[in-house]
Image 1 (cartoon, rainbow, N blue to C red):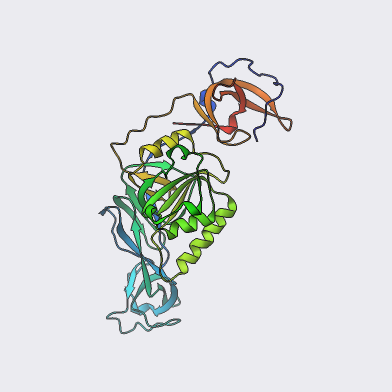
Image 2: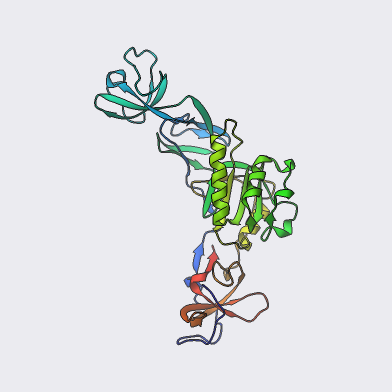
Length: 355
Protein backbone atom coordinates (compact mmCIF):
# COMPACT_ATOMS: atom_id res chain seq x y z
CA UNK A 1 0.00 0.00 0.00
CA UNK A 2 1.42 3.40 -0.98
CA UNK A 3 1.70 6.02 1.73
CA UNK A 4 3.34 9.41 2.16
CA UNK A 5 7.07 8.97 1.88
CA UNK A 6 9.21 9.65 4.91
CA UNK A 7 12.93 9.92 5.30
CA UNK A 8 14.86 8.29 2.49
CA UNK A 9 16.64 5.02 3.10
CA UNK A 10 19.94 3.69 1.87
CA UNK A 11 20.49 3.94 -1.86
CA UNK A 12 17.93 6.74 -2.30
CA UNK A 13 18.51 9.08 -5.22
CA UNK A 14 18.14 12.66 -4.05
CA UNK A 15 17.35 14.19 -7.46
CA UNK A 16 15.08 13.08 -10.32
CA UNK A 17 17.08 11.95 -13.34
CA UNK A 18 14.54 10.30 -15.69
CA UNK A 19 16.18 6.86 -15.86
CA UNK A 20 14.73 3.47 -14.94
CA UNK A 21 11.43 3.69 -16.81
CA UNK A 22 11.91 0.11 -18.02
CA UNK A 23 11.35 -1.08 -14.42
CA UNK A 24 7.75 0.17 -14.45
CA UNK A 25 5.18 -2.52 -15.30
CA UNK A 26 3.85 -2.38 -18.85
CA UNK A 27 0.14 -2.52 -19.69
CA UNK A 28 -1.20 -2.94 -23.20
CA UNK A 29 -3.47 -0.11 -24.29
CA UNK A 30 -4.67 -1.81 -27.47
CA UNK A 31 -4.04 -5.29 -28.79
CA UNK A 32 -4.83 -7.34 -31.83
CA UNK A 33 -7.81 -9.58 -31.22
CA UNK A 34 -6.64 -13.19 -31.35
CA UNK A 35 -9.68 -15.33 -30.54
CA UNK A 36 -13.01 -14.69 -28.87
CA UNK A 37 -14.49 -17.62 -26.97
CA UNK A 38 -18.10 -18.69 -26.47
CA UNK A 39 -18.82 -21.34 -23.86
CA UNK A 40 -20.84 -24.40 -24.79
CA UNK A 41 -22.45 -26.73 -22.27
CA UNK A 42 -23.34 -30.38 -22.93
CA UNK A 43 -26.39 -30.42 -25.18
CA UNK A 44 -25.72 -27.06 -26.87
CA UNK A 45 -25.75 -27.30 -30.66
CA UNK A 46 -23.19 -25.44 -32.83
CA UNK A 47 -24.65 -23.98 -36.03
CA UNK A 48 -21.36 -23.11 -37.74
CA UNK A 49 -18.31 -25.04 -38.87
CA UNK A 50 -14.60 -24.34 -38.55
CA UNK A 51 -13.49 -21.97 -41.30
CA UNK A 52 -16.85 -20.24 -41.70
CA UNK A 53 -16.73 -16.45 -42.11
CA UNK A 54 -19.36 -14.74 -40.01
CA UNK A 55 -20.61 -11.20 -39.47
CA UNK A 56 -21.64 -9.50 -36.26
CA UNK A 57 -25.00 -10.81 -35.10
CA UNK A 58 -24.64 -14.28 -36.62
CA UNK A 59 -26.23 -17.04 -34.54
CA UNK A 60 -23.38 -19.50 -34.05
CA UNK A 61 -25.03 -21.96 -31.65
CA UNK A 62 -28.18 -22.85 -29.77
CA UNK A 63 -28.12 -23.15 -26.00
CA UNK A 64 -30.32 -25.76 -24.33
CA UNK A 65 -32.33 -24.46 -21.42
CA UNK A 66 -32.72 -26.83 -18.48
CA UNK A 67 -30.75 -29.72 -20.03
CA UNK A 68 -31.09 -33.20 -18.57
CA UNK A 69 -29.51 -36.60 -19.18
CA UNK A 70 -31.14 -39.66 -20.75
CA UNK A 71 -29.89 -43.14 -21.74
CA UNK A 72 -30.21 -44.98 -25.07
CA UNK A 73 -28.88 -48.43 -26.06
CA UNK A 74 -25.45 -48.43 -27.65
CA UNK A 75 -26.99 -50.24 -30.62
CA UNK A 76 -29.10 -47.13 -31.28
CA UNK A 77 -25.96 -45.10 -32.06
CA UNK A 78 -23.57 -45.43 -34.96
CA UNK A 79 -20.67 -47.87 -34.44
CA UNK A 80 -18.13 -45.05 -34.84
CA UNK A 81 -20.04 -42.58 -32.63
CA UNK A 82 -17.93 -40.37 -30.36
CA UNK A 83 -18.60 -38.04 -27.47
CA UNK A 84 -19.87 -34.71 -28.74
CA UNK A 85 -21.65 -36.12 -31.80
CA UNK A 86 -25.27 -35.19 -32.42
CA UNK A 87 -27.79 -38.01 -32.09
CA UNK A 88 -31.35 -38.29 -33.38
CA UNK A 89 -34.00 -40.92 -32.73
CA UNK A 90 -35.45 -40.52 -36.22
CA UNK A 91 -35.09 -43.82 -38.10
CA UNK A 92 -33.75 -45.69 -35.06
CA UNK A 93 -36.27 -48.32 -33.87
CA UNK A 94 -33.98 -49.36 -30.99
CA UNK A 95 -33.91 -45.86 -29.53
CA UNK A 96 -35.86 -46.44 -26.32
CA UNK A 97 -34.98 -43.77 -23.80
CA UNK A 98 -34.44 -44.29 -20.07
CA UNK A 99 -34.44 -41.66 -17.32
CA UNK A 100 -36.47 -39.19 -19.30
CA UNK A 101 -39.17 -38.71 -21.84
CA UNK A 102 -38.97 -39.70 -25.47
CA UNK A 103 -36.47 -37.49 -27.27
CA UNK A 104 -35.63 -36.85 -30.89
CA UNK A 105 -32.25 -35.15 -30.73
CA UNK A 106 -29.40 -34.70 -28.26
CA UNK A 107 -25.64 -34.79 -27.76
CA UNK A 108 -23.72 -37.96 -26.96
CA UNK A 109 -21.84 -37.53 -23.69
CA UNK A 110 -20.26 -40.91 -22.88
CA UNK A 111 -20.83 -44.65 -23.24
CA UNK A 112 -21.00 -46.97 -20.24
CA UNK A 113 -22.42 -50.44 -19.67
CA UNK A 114 -23.70 -50.84 -23.20
CA UNK A 115 -25.63 -47.56 -23.16
CA UNK A 116 -24.98 -44.01 -24.31
CA UNK A 117 -25.72 -41.07 -22.01
CA UNK A 118 -27.22 -38.07 -23.87
CA UNK A 119 -27.72 -34.41 -22.93
CA UNK A 120 -31.09 -33.21 -24.21
CA UNK A 121 -33.52 -30.34 -23.73
CA UNK A 122 -36.71 -28.99 -25.21
CA UNK A 123 -36.18 -25.21 -25.20
CA UNK A 124 -33.38 -23.62 -27.22
CA UNK A 125 -31.90 -20.12 -27.04
CA UNK A 126 -29.66 -18.53 -29.70
CA UNK A 127 -26.02 -17.66 -29.03
CA UNK A 128 -25.11 -14.69 -31.23
CA UNK A 129 -21.58 -13.60 -32.08
CA UNK A 130 -21.22 -9.82 -31.57
CA UNK A 131 -18.12 -9.52 -33.78
CA UNK A 132 -17.19 -10.33 -37.35
CA UNK A 133 -14.51 -12.93 -37.97
CA UNK A 134 -13.70 -16.51 -38.86
CA UNK A 135 -14.63 -19.60 -36.85
CA UNK A 136 -11.38 -21.21 -35.74
CA UNK A 137 -12.42 -24.12 -33.54
CA UNK A 138 -15.53 -25.93 -32.34
CA UNK A 139 -15.39 -28.28 -29.34
CA UNK A 140 -18.81 -29.69 -28.43
CA UNK A 141 -19.63 -29.23 -24.78
CA UNK A 142 -16.67 -26.86 -24.33
CA UNK A 143 -16.82 -23.86 -26.63
CA UNK A 144 -16.45 -22.10 -29.96
CA UNK A 145 -13.43 -19.95 -30.84
CA UNK A 146 -13.78 -17.12 -33.35
CA UNK A 147 -10.87 -15.11 -34.72
CA UNK A 148 -12.30 -11.61 -34.65
CA UNK A 149 -11.54 -8.68 -36.91
CA UNK A 150 -10.32 -5.39 -35.52
CA UNK A 151 -8.59 -4.37 -32.30
CA UNK A 152 -9.34 -4.73 -28.61
CA UNK A 153 -9.13 -2.63 -25.47
CA UNK A 154 -8.32 -5.20 -22.75
CA UNK A 155 -10.05 -5.29 -19.37
CA UNK A 156 -9.57 -7.47 -16.30
CA UNK A 157 -13.03 -9.09 -16.18
CA UNK A 158 -16.31 -9.16 -18.07
CA UNK A 159 -19.61 -10.29 -16.57
CA UNK A 160 -22.69 -11.38 -18.50
CA UNK A 161 -22.94 -12.44 -22.14
CA UNK A 162 -21.04 -11.12 -25.20
CA UNK A 163 -22.89 -8.18 -26.72
CA UNK A 164 -22.49 -5.23 -29.06
CA UNK A 165 -23.92 -1.75 -29.47
CA UNK A 166 -23.15 1.91 -30.12
CA UNK A 167 -20.62 3.34 -27.67
CA UNK A 168 -22.06 6.22 -25.66
CA UNK A 169 -20.23 8.46 -23.22
CA UNK A 170 -23.41 9.81 -21.66
CA UNK A 171 -24.49 13.42 -21.47
CA UNK A 172 -21.33 14.78 -19.84
CA UNK A 173 -18.25 14.02 -21.92
CA UNK A 174 -16.03 15.78 -19.39
CA UNK A 175 -17.05 13.29 -16.71
CA UNK A 176 -16.04 10.13 -18.56
CA UNK A 177 -13.23 9.28 -16.12
CA UNK A 178 -14.91 10.10 -12.81
CA UNK A 179 -18.59 9.66 -13.71
CA UNK A 180 -21.15 7.73 -11.71
CA UNK A 181 -24.18 5.96 -13.15
CA UNK A 182 -27.38 6.69 -11.26
CA UNK A 183 -30.52 4.70 -11.94
CA UNK A 184 -32.57 7.91 -12.25
CA UNK A 185 -30.43 9.11 -15.17
CA UNK A 186 -31.38 6.19 -17.42
CA UNK A 187 -34.12 6.27 -20.05
CA UNK A 188 -35.19 4.35 -23.14
CA UNK A 189 -33.21 6.74 -25.34
CA UNK A 190 -30.08 4.78 -24.37
CA UNK A 191 -31.45 1.50 -25.71
CA UNK A 192 -28.98 -0.35 -27.90
CA UNK A 193 -25.93 1.46 -26.52
CA UNK A 194 -22.88 0.46 -24.52
CA UNK A 195 -22.40 3.05 -21.78
CA UNK A 196 -19.09 4.29 -20.44
CA UNK A 197 -19.76 4.95 -16.76
CA UNK A 198 -16.50 6.07 -15.23
CA UNK A 199 -15.54 5.04 -11.73
CA UNK A 200 -18.73 4.09 -9.90
CA UNK A 201 -21.89 2.07 -10.52
CA UNK A 202 -24.28 0.12 -8.30
CA UNK A 203 -26.31 -3.04 -8.90
CA UNK A 204 -29.62 -1.15 -9.04
CA UNK A 205 -28.33 1.02 -11.88
CA UNK A 206 -27.10 -2.04 -13.78
CA UNK A 207 -30.48 -3.75 -13.42
CA UNK A 208 -32.32 -0.65 -14.60
CA UNK A 209 -29.89 -0.17 -17.50
CA UNK A 210 -30.63 -3.66 -18.73
CA UNK A 211 -34.37 -3.14 -18.39
CA UNK A 212 -34.07 0.07 -20.45
CA UNK A 213 -32.44 -1.80 -23.33
CA UNK A 214 -28.81 -0.83 -22.69
CA UNK A 215 -26.56 -3.55 -24.12
CA UNK A 216 -23.52 -3.12 -21.91
CA UNK A 217 -21.57 -1.00 -19.45
CA UNK A 218 -17.87 -0.12 -19.28
CA UNK A 219 -16.69 0.80 -15.79
CA UNK A 220 -13.31 1.25 -14.13
CA UNK A 221 -14.09 -0.81 -11.03
CA UNK A 222 -16.91 -2.91 -9.60
CA UNK A 223 -16.99 -3.62 -5.87
CA UNK A 224 -17.58 -7.10 -4.54
CA UNK A 225 -21.15 -6.45 -3.34
CA UNK A 226 -22.23 -4.96 -6.68
CA UNK A 227 -20.59 -7.85 -8.48
CA UNK A 228 -22.46 -10.45 -6.41
CA UNK A 229 -25.77 -8.61 -6.83
CA UNK A 230 -25.30 -8.39 -10.59
CA UNK A 231 -24.46 -12.09 -10.91
CA UNK A 232 -27.55 -12.96 -8.87
CA UNK A 233 -29.65 -10.78 -11.17
CA UNK A 234 -28.10 -12.53 -14.18
CA UNK A 235 -29.01 -15.92 -12.74
CA UNK A 236 -32.62 -14.83 -12.27
CA UNK A 237 -32.70 -13.44 -15.81
CA UNK A 238 -31.41 -16.72 -17.25
CA UNK A 239 -34.17 -18.60 -15.44
CA UNK A 240 -36.95 -16.34 -16.73
CA UNK A 241 -39.20 -17.39 -19.58
CA UNK A 242 -38.70 -14.22 -21.63
CA UNK A 243 -35.05 -13.28 -21.71
CA UNK A 244 -33.81 -9.79 -22.55
CA UNK A 245 -31.06 -9.15 -25.14
CA UNK A 246 -27.48 -9.98 -24.06
CA UNK A 247 -25.96 -7.61 -21.51
CA UNK A 248 -22.37 -7.37 -20.28
CA UNK A 249 -20.28 -5.36 -17.84
CA UNK A 250 -16.63 -4.75 -18.77
CA UNK A 251 -14.41 -4.00 -15.76
CA UNK A 252 -11.22 -2.18 -16.70
CA UNK A 253 -9.26 -2.22 -13.42
CA UNK A 254 -10.79 -4.37 -10.69
CA UNK A 255 -12.74 -3.85 -7.47
CA UNK A 256 -11.13 -0.62 -6.25
CA UNK A 257 -12.97 2.54 -7.23
CA UNK A 258 -10.73 4.79 -9.27
CA UNK A 259 -11.08 6.96 -12.39
CA UNK A 260 -10.64 5.50 -15.85
CA UNK A 261 -7.04 5.88 -17.00
CA UNK A 262 -6.40 8.89 -19.23
CA UNK A 263 -5.06 6.89 -22.23
CA UNK A 264 -8.07 4.53 -22.04
CA UNK A 265 -10.46 7.49 -21.79
CA UNK A 266 -8.89 8.96 -24.93
CA UNK A 267 -9.57 5.72 -26.82
CA UNK A 268 -13.18 5.62 -25.62
CA UNK A 269 -13.73 9.23 -26.65
CA UNK A 270 -12.35 8.48 -30.12
CA UNK A 271 -14.76 5.53 -30.42
CA UNK A 272 -17.84 7.45 -29.25
CA UNK A 273 -20.72 6.76 -31.63
CA UNK A 274 -19.02 3.72 -33.19
CA UNK A 275 -20.32 0.17 -32.96
CA UNK A 276 -18.27 -1.85 -30.49
CA UNK A 277 -18.59 -5.24 -28.80
CA UNK A 278 -17.86 -6.55 -25.32
CA UNK A 279 -16.11 -9.91 -25.28
CA UNK A 280 -16.27 -12.08 -22.16
CA UNK A 281 -13.44 -14.46 -23.14
CA UNK A 282 -11.10 -12.61 -23.18
CA UNK A 283 -12.54 -9.59 -21.34
CA UNK A 284 -12.16 -6.73 -23.81
CA UNK A 285 -13.89 -4.00 -25.78
CA UNK A 286 -13.61 -5.10 -29.42
CA UNK A 287 -13.94 -2.65 -32.30
CA UNK A 288 -13.27 -2.65 -36.03
CA UNK A 289 -12.76 1.01 -36.88
CA UNK A 290 -9.73 1.44 -39.16
CA UNK A 291 -10.32 5.19 -39.49
CA UNK A 292 -10.15 5.76 -35.75
CA UNK A 293 -6.64 6.94 -34.92
CA UNK A 294 -5.38 6.47 -31.39
CA UNK A 295 -2.19 8.30 -30.48
CA UNK A 296 -0.07 6.50 -27.87
CA UNK A 297 0.56 8.35 -24.59
CA UNK A 298 3.98 9.93 -23.97
CA UNK A 299 6.63 7.40 -23.07
CA UNK A 300 7.14 8.92 -19.59
CA UNK A 301 3.41 8.89 -18.74
CA UNK A 302 2.75 6.64 -15.72
CA UNK A 303 -0.29 5.81 -13.60
CA UNK A 304 -0.60 4.76 -9.98
CA UNK A 305 -2.65 1.56 -9.99
CA UNK A 306 -2.80 0.93 -6.23
CA UNK A 307 -1.99 2.51 -2.91
CA UNK A 308 -2.58 5.97 -1.50
CA UNK A 309 -2.44 7.72 -4.88
CA UNK A 310 -4.39 5.06 -6.80
CA UNK A 311 -5.83 6.47 -10.00
CA UNK A 312 -3.51 9.48 -10.22
CA UNK A 313 -1.37 9.96 -13.31
CA UNK A 314 1.84 11.82 -13.80
CA UNK A 315 5.23 12.00 -15.47
CA UNK A 316 8.09 9.64 -14.68
CA UNK A 317 11.13 11.48 -13.37
CA UNK A 318 13.51 8.66 -12.52
CA UNK A 319 14.42 6.19 -9.80
CA UNK A 320 14.21 7.32 -6.19
CA UNK A 321 16.02 4.36 -4.68
CA UNK A 322 14.80 2.54 -1.58
CA UNK A 323 12.38 4.68 0.40
CA UNK A 324 10.66 4.26 3.74
CA UNK A 325 6.87 4.49 3.61
CA UNK A 326 4.13 4.43 6.22
CA UNK A 327 4.12 1.26 8.28
CA UNK A 328 7.89 1.07 8.33
CA UNK A 329 8.17 -0.66 4.95
CA UNK A 330 11.16 -0.04 2.71
CA UNK A 331 10.35 -0.24 -0.99
CA UNK A 332 12.08 0.52 -4.27
CA UNK A 333 10.51 3.76 -5.47
CA UNK A 334 10.49 6.13 -8.40
CA UNK A 335 10.02 9.87 -8.78
CA UNK A 336 6.66 10.88 -10.26
CA UNK A 337 5.56 14.44 -11.06
CA UNK A 338 1.82 14.98 -10.49
CA UNK A 339 0.70 18.16 -12.23
CA UNK A 340 2.69 21.17 -11.05
CA UNK A 341 3.70 19.57 -7.74
CA UNK A 342 7.29 18.65 -6.90
CA UNK A 343 8.32 15.05 -7.67
CA UNK A 344 7.04 12.46 -5.21
CA UNK A 345 8.47 9.00 -4.51
CA UNK A 346 6.01 6.20 -5.33
CA UNK A 347 6.74 2.45 -4.97
CA UNK A 348 7.56 0.88 -8.33
CA UNK A 349 5.09 -1.94 -7.64
CA UNK A 350 2.26 0.63 -7.57
CA UNK A 351 3.04 2.07 -11.01
CA UNK A 352 2.12 1.09 -14.54
CA UNK A 353 2.65 2.56 -17.99
CA UNK A 354 0.68 2.08 -21.19
CA UNK A 355 2.36 0.79 -24.34
